[in-house]
Image (cartoon, rainbow over all chains, first blue to last red; front, top):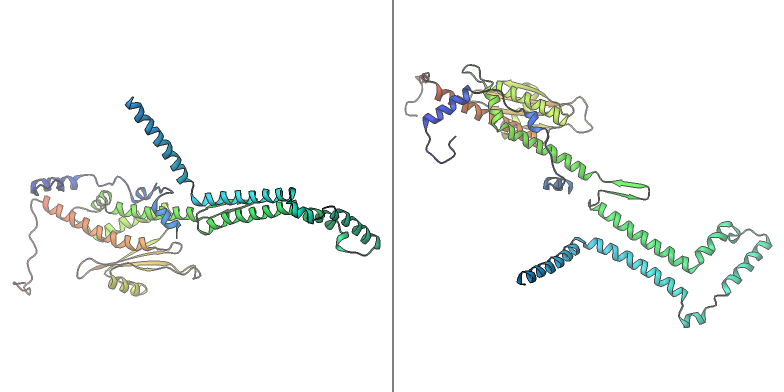
Length: 53
Length: 322
């Protein structure tokens, strides 16, 4: 993905796509890891909003 | 010298600000509370002082020696006659002198005012959910509002975190893992990611649900919910009432059109867990993300394939101008 405002370079895109397709197919983390260890502080506005209900 | 003056000014300013901050921190309610207690105590002290030092006009009218002398003969008189009355009881003999004492009256009245004042300031914050826990003698009150709010916030944040995960790189790689050769199918990816979410819900919320995916098929028992989902474009959600049959499952059904001719029906069911508004949006999000990821992978495969297959020939019935 071009993030610097440069015109799309087909060769670069194909190179990146090839790298992605030939790269590892095991994710670094699962949904369980993503949802685990979520911390919410007591003074978080979300907590205050729920507490005020 | 100039530096010293500036430093002194700053110190004075800081000192004043410190006092001002301290005063601001001292909220109006606390100030009112303390002022009330001080006034009650002062009123009690003033009342006792007035009793001990009565005004001359009042002391001239009253006859303090009459009360004790009149009390004892009446007790003796009533005791001697043998008729039962309230004044003969031990309570009357012990309590009456305490209660009738003007000093004790002032003390009890002040204690009563203090009691009401303190109770008022303990009960009112509870009504407004400001005080979460307080102890009054041996009775302890705790309001669970904050803990419940934190739990609710954690659940919401976890589900938002799941959405972040699904739209991120890891879910894309997981989608890529479902590609075998040059073949990747929507239902396969959906099953893998739903299994992942199922495990996450079980571990995080201790909430289990079962997954059913139907391709181009709507079972009769899900027909109405599927129709509702198809019409609205959102998940169709049904949670049983608390008093409902325990073996009736909560359900969430989502109709997703893959193409003009094919569709998927995703059904999540749970006996113990209710589905909420977040879950309702997670399911469409999941389908949309899978669709986008598969399209990206298809484009990558086409871009990196040196000998792409020719596009299918147009059908003879097709309008060439369209």
